[in-house]
Image: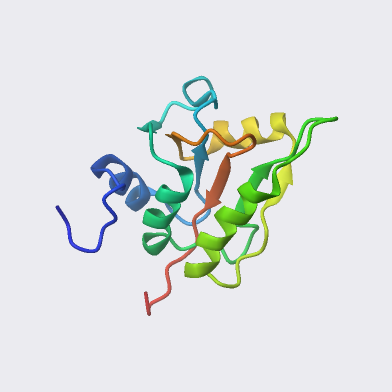
Length: 144
């Protein structure tokens, strides 16, 4: 056990986060997301909420300051979003990174394409509709 590492961060996830470089993306996928179909590097965090994983990842992970650091799926035509999903993510994100802009929203197929080129997909236990979130890694400051 390492000190200062959230217990939800598995050794494989910690290794993956460390391997990622500036501009690389990781998908925090909900439990319904076709992670294994869209990306060859899939980590499993079944049963863990995306918020729990965000709480563990963000103290270790600098968000990109040069490009939109967050991406979420836009609702399908005729569908609605539960605004509480984004709100709960942003509450955790802004506690660590206060100036982070709201997520960019892209349609489902554009989201899948981003997931194909992401460094990794982390399948969570999140069951909220449109609960998928992409994080883009930035450059850690010297003061971190």
